[in-house]
Image (tube, rainbow, N blue to C red; front, side):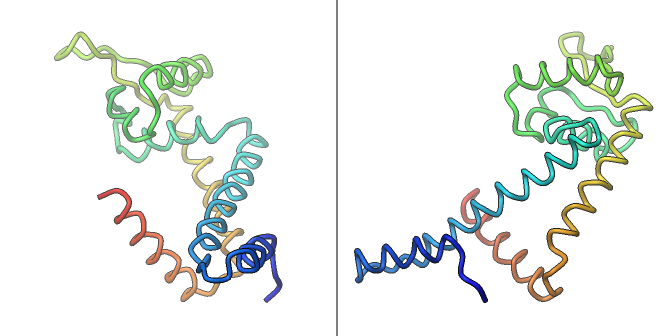
Length: 163
């Protein structure tokens, strides 16, 4: 296997602090770099389809909620991990594009749930296929066993960090 810039980072720390095991630094650096590169590739692909990762996050959260593809703004913010003000701005943009609409809630007049329009459902379904294609391409060099191993390891780390 060829070396990468992170190998050089590890080698320099091993030279400078020979008693320090910097293997965790290498793993975390690779995870960070991988995340940046994957997100960049997805963003570029979505941009070519006239969308963005932020739009995709909102549209896909609404679509996977099931019919009638409607969520309260607070639930949507939580799912997308975006502040309420950020969500308001994102919904405004998607509403202007005709992909979502705000609806009155007769049971609670203080909130206006956000719903996908017909065009929003179509866009969400197209974009999820596009994203899955990109992710499949990125992971295409891995064997099923490697894919499962990465999945298992990252699931464990995420569970530890979020508990």
